[in-house]
Length: 468
Image (cartoon, rainbow, N blue to C red; front, side, top):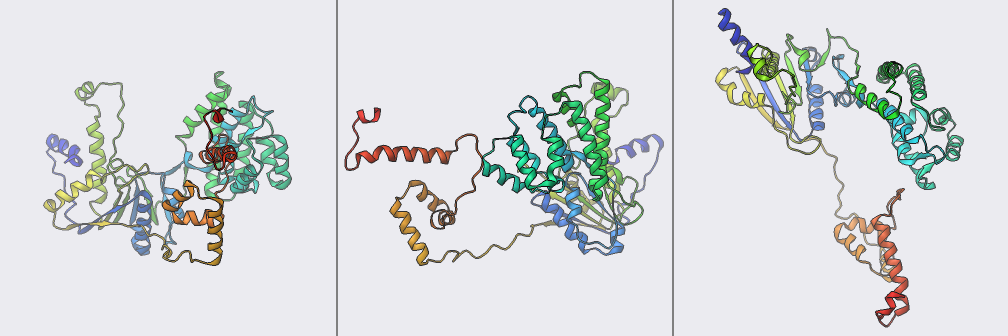
């Protein structure tokens, strides 16, 4: 058993007999197969809502992947106890990091094209950030409509002046970031001032902590830029910003001695909980592949008694079984489909419990559940569209104009799409495109052929007519 690898070595050397606490407690182990990671979080929230305050104070939620922690906390029901989150939130997943990264990329592309203005895609990416409405008072959809209405490929100073006139609150942001390009040193100064103002003005606890970590990150990059001459261009600055930002975390605040504990697997060592819930119990997360890079060859590591990949696996297995040895109930959640829609199997530890638990103890029972996330009730579409004089009139008008193959195809593929487009006259939302789309190209071809063939009504064009 890999979890006992270190005990076996000590027992042989020192003639020890380590006790087994696994058989001392009656426990139930519940394995929940969910569809996706979102389904895991929903099932966990349902489980926590069922627990009493006394049970929650004796419980731990072990998260194998830190990325969904923040959405999980936001979706939690009102619990009768406090929550302590020991792990940090990766800064790269926060809106503030994405905003600064996009502003950095914008100025890297902006330099040298200031007369032509800001490229609309770069500005749209910034406007779609959740912090943009908070800072400027303009919604991201409002920016998209403004760009689409004006067919703005590049947004110049005149366009920004019009935007400031409509939304005066956006003047400070536009003046500092979009009026003119900044060199890397100026960008760092503006970024520090901007993040510091967010830290002082905003009262959201998470944004407050994120702004603090971002300000510390920018100070670190500024120190590098002052020390090393090579860090003077945007390309190098972007690389350093991404590299350092990938390792930064924003800390949660909490009380480790009371309430519900949300921990990583490593942080559960030497702590006993009666109720254990592990989220992300997939093989690629628990225990995971674990890249083992070393300059010392494997044979030399083994000869000199250094740590090997098998030691890492043994440590992980020990931590897992150590966590559940005194528990009364264990809930293991794993997703059948991960984010990129590739299949993912349950952890090897779940399989091991299924096969070996009945042989090891009679005081533990394992149950398997298949979790189906709730879905909104679909409306009854049996009589979604009732025939009326209006629809008859619109269909006759459509047929008089001529029936195109695309309209017949639309009816066969999706009758609702056909009804909206050809009966109600509701078209698709126009998007700003720099290259001609397939639909527009088809319309142009139709119009050209219609104009050409109109002169040959009742006859056919000759071969020479096509060359004129």
